[in-house]
Length: 307
Image 1 (tube, rainbow, N blue to C red):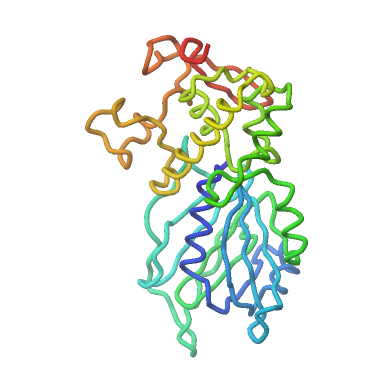
Image 2: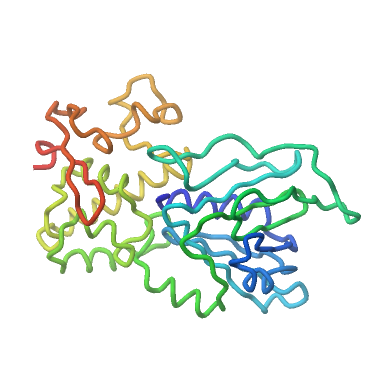
């Protein structure tokens, strides 16, 4: 499942490409037909992320106060793809399917696109089960396989967002709800970091790597950690996830542990300390990295560095 940094990149990308434009919205697959009919012809005014949820605000062309929200969650299989003319610059795919860590490759697919009488791009026929298609002046974006894709009122969208924990990628986020929730829980911190109502956007890789970098045993109950420990985990994820937004991949190693290899070239061999490195020596102490199942997900850690 794409982690929070990917959704923030999507929000920025969709905003850069479409905000201010009156979009044509369809559901080639048909499963989002009613929602697409509500959005079609509206103007995209805002695109943003909170954790793993993407929020797109659409206003009526003649009434900016008449707003509806398209809220989506990629889940395990969801992905956005982009294509258009030479003025439409975008990554070819963000989301699943992807390689370990994330796949995000290439540039917008460029082809001999056609234009209508108004000078807008005429998109190519959809390929596969496209849940939603957004078409702007110079290109289009297709959403396939999301776990969630719905249209809500602003009040409904805010109510759904209120159920989420704070997002480390939100510069205005208050970590206190995370600190309080973790501090009173007897569940393992390795579980709590993946609970989206406790903290938003952290997935399996950021969990493993932030715990390693802070030297925290994943099985330690949240209530057994100090406030300093918990705040350190929050700050670690703020830093690591920001790198993910900037680079487009999850790079968690320090430059000192990969001399002469910049973060933009670290993935995959030099990207992470413990994630998917079970059975190999820890990069810092040489102890064999371990893996176990925790709540249905693979957990990776160094038993010496995280004793």
